[in-house]
Length: 513
Image 1 (cartoon, rainbow, N blue to C red):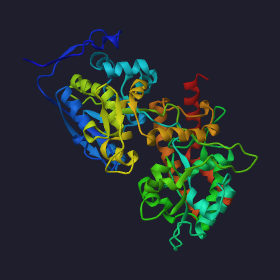
Image 2 (image 1 turned 90 degrees about the horizontal axis):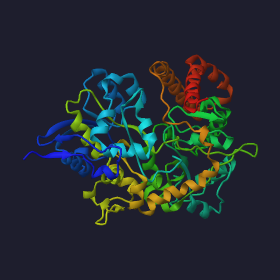
Image 3 (image 1 turned 30 degrees about the horizontal axis):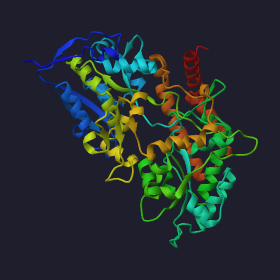
Image 4 (image 1 turned 45 degrees about the vertical axis):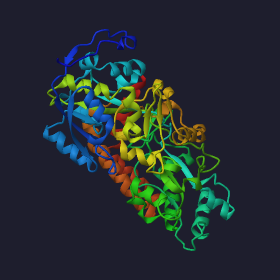
């Protein structure tokens, strides 16, 4: 007898507006090709139980292309070749989709017919639909995750070192400098070697590097790639602001004083984590990053999160907060026109937005023991046995931010999680008093037109390369004060006025201004 999936509603109670969904014959297996990103240490997605179960439910075979490094280069080649996989899991930007829109599938009708889990998500979180809408169609689906804080960055300091040296927690940049000198000279880790690093941060980029500290001078960016600043509805970019200059002066002085590791410009987040959290003894005094646990690993207990630092009484101290709607990560699932079995692909995608998949997607499949579905229908997220933390294990056993799913409020109420996850949410309370007003945070749901993207593509790339180059030069060699006016003139030559105007128009249109 042919096996039939009939998505008639047992789901009707949940989706009263969608009382009839087409029957689909799934007696014969079909093959779907999927391309995804992952971290270097992540196991093969093909071996993850969550994907095996989703594929089994709709009788599909999955052929994976998993890219662990060099994603941008490989993506560019792929998009130029027009030889697309059936499904992209994360990795495509709004710009990629907008520019190549005819190559992707408007999933609107497919969702209504074959994806009740997605329909439910749209009903419960309308912005989930908005995030994937391009023109009149739905071309992507989001990744909505749970246990996510509102600020993507924290400031941590070694409290054991402070206590050993009889120091107070610093509250200003000047006090921090004094603490860093004491860390450098006082052998606080007690090994008799002058190997302490005052402050470390991941290589200059966005979200986690030390330019989060511009809040000491009353200016913070929106933690987006291009460091957008919004003040009372007016757009600028962090590297246009005097706060950027002032912080760069501090960073240069600290670098010259030997308070910063020389590898700070080449260590990516993983390498910086290794410096902070590996070895026999703690070596780093202060860092920015997602959390102390994330940055310091086995040495976490030595560190505390501290409030933002002040640059002086004349400034309102601030701290950057996550992009508005950051818990909705756009463009997690995109179907290409190359897909020959669009109905079955949509049914498979529907499985990726089930409650079961939501719990596994970010933390690991049920068969790993990292997550559990209990007999009473509740869920548990469990501490790993082979790693020191969930922060470590999740990157091995799941796609995490490179995956997809819908961790709803309903699922969160059904889920028990350890303190490692709930505690990071509590850390937010340290920074909430310093957050910008919501209207001064760039909404991720803003999309640029194809014409705007064409203008921005080269402008943004040239500007950000130039900014990173000059920042590194100034931190190492100094000269930011003398070169600041010339720097601003060159940004104008690169098109920053046009970039600012495009961003301002998009912001105004979004807010109906």
